[in-house]
Image (cartoon, rainbow, N blue to C red; front, side, top):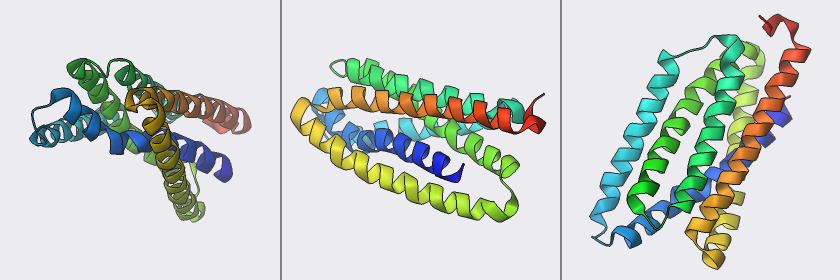
Length: 190
C-alpha cells in the first residue's frame, strides 16, 4: 500500500510541478503589462488555496467519503489545468480555471492528511509521510524536466493540457486505490 500511495502521488506531482514554474511566463506574455502582474496573480492563487483548505475542513464528509473527495478534487483540478491550457489565449478565462484548480489543490492537503491520520497506524505514519514526500519530489523533478522539454517543443498551453491528463490518471488511480482499500478493510464500510 505504501508503494502504491507514493507512486500515485509522485505521478500527480509530475503533472502539477511544470505548471508551478510556467504560469508566470505565460501570463506575463499574455497580459503584456509588466512583471508586476505576476504578484497579483500569485496572491489570487494563494487565496484560492486557502479557500480550498478551508472548504475541505468545513465540509468533511466523514471517514468513509475521504477517498472519494480526494479523487474528486484531484479530478477537478486536473480538468481545470487542461481547461487553462485550452483557454491560454484568453488570459482572464485561463486565470478563472487556474483559480478553481488552486481551490482543489488547497483542499487536497487537508483531505489527504486527515485520511493518513485516520487510516495509517501511528507507527507507520512517519514512514508513509517520508516516502510520500520523497516520491512527490521525485515526481516533481521528472515532471519539471519532461514538462519543460515539452513546453519548449509545443508550448506551455499544450504542456498544461498534458499535465491535466496526467493529473486525471492520478485521480483515477486514487479512486481505484480507495475502492480496493474498502474491499480489503470491511471496517471502513458504512
